[in-house]
Length: 346
Figure 1: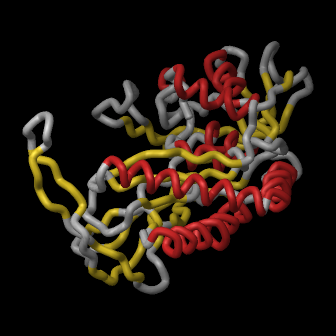
Figure 2: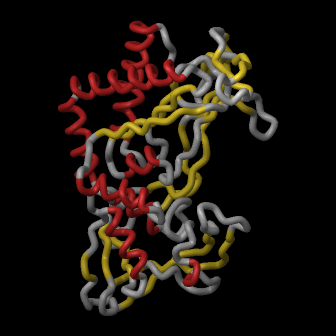
Figure 3: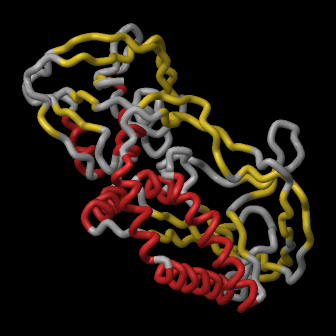
C-alpha cells in the first residue's frame, strides 16, 4: 500500500499497465501440522467485490479441490492455522484482511486473486507437484469460464462505490457452524546435507471439528465520498497515488463543500514495522467550504480503483497512508487531516 520498496512499486505498475484478470500468488507455509498438501485463499478484505469472492468460493475453489482429490488423492483447503484465542476453543484462522497482503490488494483493484500455500513439511517434490496441479486446474477452470471472468471484472470496474458504506477496519468472523479440519503429523529426520533436524509430513490424518475464521466483518464503516481534495504540498502522496494507478485531476479554483476530519488524538506504535511506526487516528468530521489552492488535485471515487483509493486516503483506514505514517508530520491533535472529503450529493 505504501509502495516504499521497488518490488511493491513494480507490482503496482504491473497491474496498472498489464492489468491481468487473474493473479495467482505462489508460496509455501509451515505452521499447523495439518493434512493438506496445499491451502489457498481468496482476497480477504470485506470491500472485495462480492462477485469475485463468489466466483472463487462457490466456483473455482470447490471445483479445483474436487479435481485434485479425484486425480491425485490429495486434499486442499482454505489457508489457516489451528489455535485458540482469548481462552476460546481452537479455531481454524486465516491470516489478515489488510491490503498490504498481495491477494487482498489485488482484490481491491477488482481483479481475481488467489493465494497458494504449499505445505512446507511435504517433500520438495510434493510441494512442486501440489503447486503445479493447483495452477493447472486454475488455468483450466479460468479458460472454461473466460467469459464469466471478463464479465465479473468489467462489472466490478463499472459498478462504482461512491455513496456506498465500506469497511475501514475489520475483525475475523466465526463460521455459522463448525467445520471438519484434516489434521496431520510430522516425523523428525536428519537433513542429508546440513545434519540439522528436518520435519517431514507423515502419511497420517485425522479430523478435528472447530469453528472457522476465514472471513472478516467490518468494525468501522464509512460512506465513500464523491472525491478527495489533496493539497499540492502533499507531493509524496500524489506520487504514490499515481504509482497505484489512481486517476487524478486538477481541483480548479471553485470553492468546494468539504468534510474535514478534526483529529482528537493520534496513537503511534512504539515499534517500527517495515521501517515505519503505524498510526491510528481518532476524531470527528466537520463541514467546511474551501477554495482549492494552485496545484491541488481531486481524486474521484467513481473510477475503477475507487475501493483502493478509499482504503489509501481515509484517515481511519487500517492500511492507508495515514496508518503507515506517511502524513505523520501533519497529524496533530486539534488540527484537521490534510486530505478533505468532497461529499458530493450524499
